[in-house]
Image 1 (cartoon, rainbow, N blue to C red):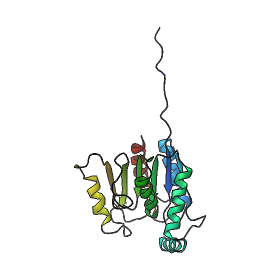
Image 2: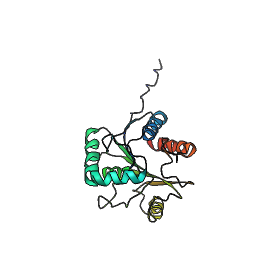
Image 3: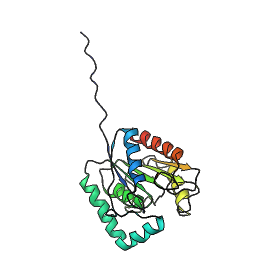
Length: 204
């Protein structure tokens, strides 16, 4: 008698997604839902601004200064501690800072997804953790991306001499900083769909 091969479902990953400087907008929540639907994995969206949603990025940065960057980072690290089961951390623009820090300093994260920003690999620790994959999504003409960010990210994706430091960079032909946020006038559904599919492939 031939017994059927048992089917074991792929374990559901837990993802933490940190919002951008405008706050936890409806567009960020919609993106989290898109990632959940595409990947089948749970996405947590901590609110680092305590409910405040700002009309512009400039207003958001002013709000960040009012709260204090250290306080926002503390809130983010607290959220990571609350979601101990999370193995993937992601961030959009301002949210890349806490995501990057968590990926560098918390051993449990297996992947970091950076959208609309990139930081030095030694921003929060001397070395990038070799077991943590890095995926970066940048708008090629983004006026908010620092001049050094895109060339820096390109070097990460071209580090053939560091095979233990996997990094993927995806560039999008747009100047929209928040092209993935459907609650803004910068939203680009096509680019967002492509980005979500790339994230799904990473999570798979």
